[in-house]
Structures are given as structure tokens and as C-alpha cells.
Image (cartoon, rainbow, N blue to C red; front, side):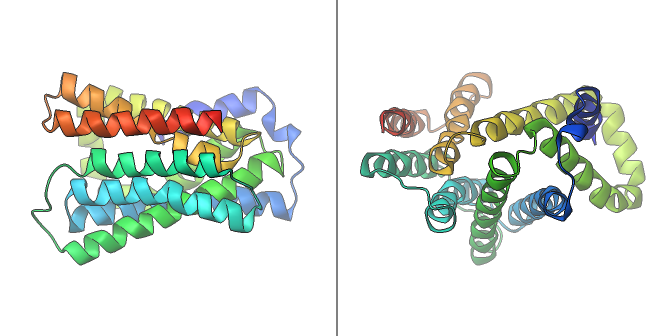
Length: 248
């Protein structure tokens, strides 16, 4: 809701709705984008409920760009170079290594793995879907994301109504964090969509995972998390993979 409240007025103010040819195909892709991201969020949180973050998160973030790369080649006809594939593979391996430093200690491992892989499939699905929306149908990235956020907020509103006392408490205690996450989360994906307008999925999808590198440094410095040596080695693999990917 926070992301929608921030960026939907921006889309309206910039007149982006008038820049789009609204036909059945356009409406399908806008609705589909919001729906796929709902499934992404729900499967990710279901995975967290079934198993450890250290197991589910690397599976989701590592397999997402892997599936997206495969889908871009098979479905969109993108042609990766051998060097580009090596760079993408280095990033994905680094993501797995950097995020899997703690053993699985709770929950049902099989269900956790299943939901982690399913989340990766939905990451790849909405990435490929949105690539077509912004590059072929020319839907402006801010418009696509703001409408998608509105669809997600609308679809999940019944859950919020059912748990309204908790919603009010969370808003009262964490108002500015909610606004900040709503703004930064949507802005980050708007930047991804902007890149997808002209750049191939096989480049953008793996490059998104450098966020793991930034998070590692912040976690080590601000949150005093462990396994720093292993994570820095994995970070080096990610950085090298980024360099190789860009040079390709």
C-alpha cells in the first residue's frame, strides 16, 4: 500500500496512463505482473514459515536469475555469449555461497527447498513477463510497477482487514520503516524495469543479485553478522562475475 500510495500518483501526474495503448493485451500484462508478484511474495513467505532463511533465501535468489536466463534464451530468443554465461554462473554461485553460511536447523527441509525453488520460478516468471511488457508493449516502468503494487495491495487487503488490530499496531510502531521499504522496494524494481527496456534479461537478471553483495557488507558492518570471511570470498566471485558479464 505504501509503494502504491507513493508511485501511483507519480504515474498519474506524469500522464503515463495516456502514453499507453490500453487494449486486451496491455491489460493482461499489467494484471499478470501484479498477480505473478503476489505469488512470489506468498511462496517466499511460505518458505520462510517452513524452513530457515539461510536455506530458502539462497535457493530463491540463486535459482531466480538461473531460470530467468534459461527462459530468456528459450522463450525470448536471447543469444548469450559463452563469456556472458560464465559471468552469470559466477554470480549465481556466489549468491548461493554468500547466503548459505548457516546450517538448516528447523522446519521441514523438503518443503523449504520446494518453496525456495518455486519462489525462484516466480522470480523468473515475472522478470520475463515484465521484460515483454516494458520492451515490446512499451509500458512505462513507473506505470507498470505502480499499478502492479496497487493490484498487490488490493488483492491482499482482505488479509489486512482480517488482522486489522495487528495492522494498526504495526503502522503505529513502524510507520517510517513501512514507508521507507515501500519507497525503496518499488524504486529498485522500477530501475530494473528501466534496464529491461533495452538490456537483455540474461544481463539484468544476474546483475540484480549484486544486492546480496551490498547486503553482506552492511550485515557485517551494521549488524555484526558472522561468516564474514566466507561471505567476502563469495562476494569476490560475485564482483568478478559482474565484471565478466559486463565485458561480455
